[in-house]
Image (cartoon, rainbow over all chains, first blue to last red; front, side, top):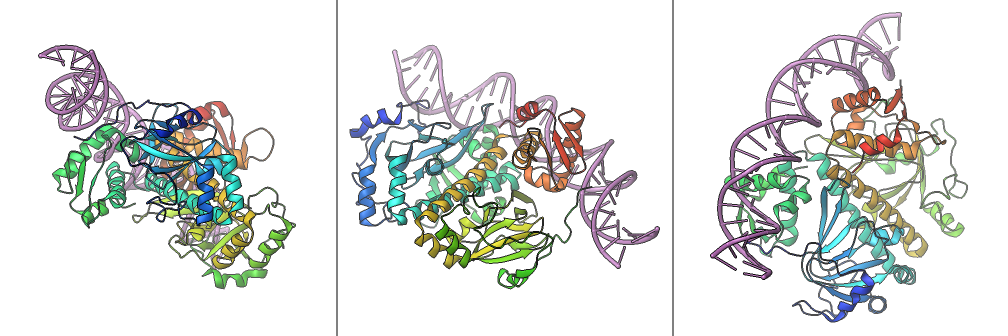
Length: 259
Length: 259
DNA sequence: GTTGCCGTGTGATGGCCGTCACAATTTTCT
DNA sequence: AGAAAATTGTGACGGCCATCACACGGCAAC
């Protein structure tokens, strides 16, 4: 089966302290600078001029975290922007009565906490590593100065926010318009497949998420996810082997996921 | 009681053509320039330096629309940013099977279509006037040049997007975490009350929306809205006279709206 | 091994609320 | 004013799905 991540409540403490982990690498190639980063050209914030990038590299503090680490918590004062260099991070929020919603699984090149830092408010999400990660944190003050100095970067920030806005919007849209649990779950799977599909044209991918987490992503309950995945398989829409999911009938599945 | 807006499908045609309405004013004070606009200091985009504002005023095209006018449609190519100078605009989107979701009622000073224009994509929402409005439209090309020239404006754009992101996010959060229709409706009413409350400390406000529209805002059906409003009144939580709503027990109501 | 924990599978139950249907009322149009 | 259209009010029905409850299997710790 898929490897579940233990230490869900693992917390390395405040970000300042955690930079002590600076030299720990959790079985990954160490990324040492932005210039040579593989994601440089593909992502919004990495794709800057040499000059800006160099400056950007200087004001940031690199750090590594193990799986389960909480980078920041919903409600914390937004002190830093976090650039995710490698690994995956779960972005979630929780209601007072304990219900959890997972807004996004962030990947390398994603910028976390941008909105809250720019607006000077609190983080609206909790960021937790679901794999060992490497990040680059930039303190708010430095980041704002950076934006001021490099107009180019402001545009990038605006674009990144625009894209965050869009995904949040699409989420809201989905939740509001796709009333059935199966539509929403299908949409989550398709979206995941599109971004995580391991190359090729077939929609086959690994999803190291529990049914509970899938439920939190699609706004439904754990049991319903279990039942729906079973139903999807019985209807030959998908195939599941361990953590690997293959979508057999993308058209029908897409149909199901209409919003 | 309240005035519903007729001509729901009223469409003045493409934006380019509609600027011919330039000199029509629908019973409102005409706003002639950004410098003297009452909303200047209060809203993100209006609050610029004299120089930037002057330039901003020059690249924009002013126009007025009657109630019911569609400013742009979901799926249109995002050609222009629209600054709403006066009046209210309903921002909505519709699923293929006809369900509608209202994301926001925009007011004076709000910027419409910013995300899509910055990203160079399609409008993701339909913008329709629910009152006579005055707007200032800026073509994408001009707007981007403006952002480039005035770094200050890029920051404003980023902030505006951040704020849009936040509301979209809160919407998604609400829909996902507040499972009951009454929570969601209560939240919509409270949010509306907070922004639209006519001064004073009491939460009394007018809401010129049909039950159907309230349903579209809270992700529930028209009948359920009717029933819930009745229930809220019976429980002495609110009072309704025509289009005027007064929240009698803000604490209890807030409790109800927890997400 | 065995103990415990976590994730998964599955049945039973019940309530919320979407939908249909139709009546009453208000608004708009001419 | 009178007709037509839109909005609102209300009852009945039924399905979806959240919730509870419990069984089963894998995995880690000891």
